[in-house]
Amino acid sequence: MSTAARKTGVHRARTETKSAEYVLGTDTDESVRLGLQHRLWSAAAHEIWETAGLQPGMTALDLGCGPGYATLDMAQIVGPRGRVIGVDESATFLKQLNDQAKARRLENVDRVLGDVQKLEEAMPRSDASIDLAYARWVFCFLPHPEYVIRGLRRLLKPGGRLAVQDYFNYEAMTIAPKNAAFSKVIAAVGKSWRARGGDPDIMGRLPAMLAAAGFRIEHLQARQRLARPGSTLWHWPESFFSNYVPRLAESGFITEGDRDEFTALWKSTSEDPNAFIMLPAVYDLVAVRP
Image (cartoon, rainbow, N blue to C red; front, top):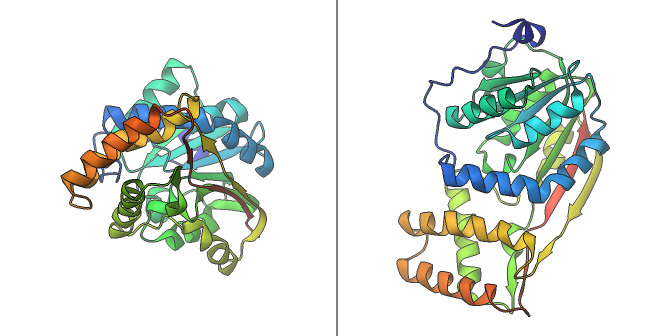
């Protein structure tokens, strides 16, 4: 174990271990999509970190960190006296995080290969050592979000904070003018997540789950964004649909005809300057551990 790892009590991830498959995949296309997504939502991420009080010298935990786009930003904020620990079950993503941390000469980043629902196994010697934990679009994919909360109850320091950005009422996402083919695909997205144990409306349940575990909800707000063809933000749903709609067809949640109808609709909508898309609302939550 390195000196840095000894300071946090965390072993670096063994990136040769085969990881479970993330519902959206872990290939290069998905990594690129996640990078674009982070850039388009980075202002919102920094805002919730500021609200939660992320400071230089802190130890932070990035749950379901993926390739580590947020992890690296947080590492710059906490600085050399601080620490950021990225936890993910994809060895591929963690290798990307390691490569980027080395390229940026950030020596305050640790990686933990593991399931965020099993934090007691992934981080067995880190009781009450974390100042702030962050989870963006993670809880919505988990069969047992309550297990994460239980793990955080142990890991966070008294007064430590959990900052979450996730969905509620996801399937209200729509294009204007409304179209049945679009609505059918969005419903299939939600169904596919639920089939794997996820919940695209998780933020509706999360406050009560946290309160039951003794956390105090300190901040809760909704972020509703609209994108128009030709805008930078338009590329966020576009990158998601190009990646995930074919997966929906391959897995039987939609037919090939549905896929082709949606593809044609999206192309025509992308060329219509009077169209717009109401994106799924993202909710910010900050909870305090007693």
